View (cartoon, rainbow, N blue to C red):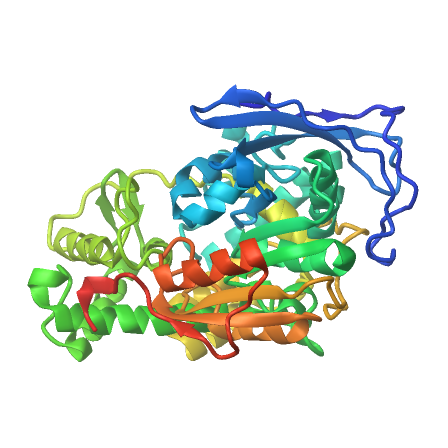
Length: 513
């Protein structure tokens, strides 16, 4: 494994960059001398390396940052095309952790013809990871007063807003936080392209990784060889919003992620009801009865949370678990607790636990949000601190049901964030790339609505959309052999599917339909 990334806050890094790369710099204006990567064996069949990049591309001779990089060499070296860069999204999911888990999801021909390369984006994983508190216990203490999932009532809402305001202030003391925009990650990606010896970029990004790809395509349009954007946001909605949207809504709501999750939750409950108890443990016999049962469960948990598996399940925590569980419509091999059947089992366990005598609840342990917030809050336009998050949450609930408040309060964490990367990229999104881009998306994605991928395909200078009539977040994580064949043809030979092509998934939840 590559050594743990570090930030070298020093001068004289010896990085030669001929052009400054601010957000307004012409795409592809860089002329650099980039050394080749020194690969060493790691993690079985993988190889790891470290790449050094400038922290601030406006000051290329200043502080530097080491990026952790991993690759799986092409299975057929004699017919190798080059490198395929992969970003799993998040933001803040380390590529070196995701690649071993997702490698088998890439079509065999793609694995044979390309070295598949992933890296930990700056500020994450092994690439100078942002840690806002020296002692993680101090962060847990700060967030201990915040509700799991989302807050209910004025007291919890005030505690939530205050905790994330203080977290933002603490994170702003870390110098790297001012340089974590998607545009800077795209600049890092272009240096990595050069470091592996590729003239042009071949890329596959899922979820937020598709936004990274779109940013690269507009900063470096002449360097795009092939680019698959899997489950994309509307780039305008995600970056700035339209009109005055950013005055009241953050990127998750502007991209209508809440609406997508609400639709998919309804589909899950309907399918669970039709499957019966033999297929879905939470089934109440019919679609309507199962929807009503879910609403009743949340009502119970609002006033009487339960402990299950060492965790406290409030209404907010249960909604959060529901949203995440909708990501994988069918079980992911090797990943316990995935698939809609497992969500049905969890909800039934919570239903049954509510009938037991109440006992003490375990403390809430919050996964550190530092790295994800450091990217989103510095990169996307967010409502000012004077906005009314409770009103926004009520709006979200009115349009998307029980899941709405989760998205509203997730956005609210950025309301008082003090750092905005001056080198972020906010568009335009229509610069003509050297070769066309392929956007792929599921119709029933609970995180990135299909409409976002449609908007991405329309916004880019040259793009085609491939649709999969399936549930789940990202096509890569919810396999479709049909889509995989089209992706392989495109990545290897540059052949796009015909406009309007729709694929089917390999499996459907509960094997219905």
